[in-house]
Image 1 (spheres, rainbow, N blue to C red):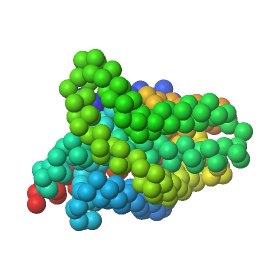
Image 2 (spheres, rainbow, N blue to C red):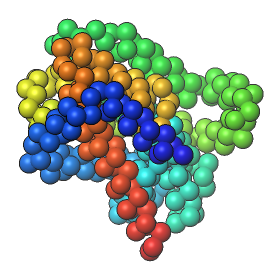
Image 3 (cartoon, rainbow, N blue to C red):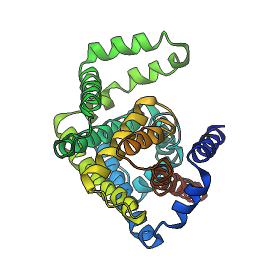
Length: 299
């Protein structure tokens, strides 16, 4: 159902931007860049998989690097769920293959998401010093949200107070007991040393992703500097994350197009670029996830 809704959105999105011009833009895309971009995206994902290995070791989940990467890439099959929450399936894989309790590994996906947002915000904050794009309010909003989340996780009484409030929401009522049981893991995964290490690894991963984004612009013949391509694309990803929609679809694309058209770029060109970025990024990752999951369960 989610995939069908996404397809409908993209059809409308492309049609509105002028499908003929969109097709022309795609035909002018330099395919020689695709192998390099995909290699960079795979490297980005591999580094994130290594980050997962470090986080799991911190909560005494001791599995081989190979199994860790298989579980990480399998989890990518659920990237297109609201806020990427489907990544919780990794906890199911860990229980099924290695016997670890769901409550022990349950916080993993949320901590990874936290570090991704932290790294993106850090990169945008730095690059914003060299651009005239007005993204200060976005940076401040995300920063406040991250600080609040971190404070809640690191303060036991506050954590249980928040989960108690969440239990009053019908759809989250069944989730809150698991959150409470997972507090110890959440606390360990947000310790000072782990946070600094994961933040550093996330910065490295997203810096590589930034280069892949820049090359996508170049492949379309758009000679923007890497500061502009980074700020526009990562800001759009942040806005998409705030929407809590599956993979941020809709908000990410519309935000990106909004930034680009304000800079004088044609709507059809902006649409072509963001769809290619999504194809080579999130949809490539999702495909890898499905392939790995099939291999994982065939063992």
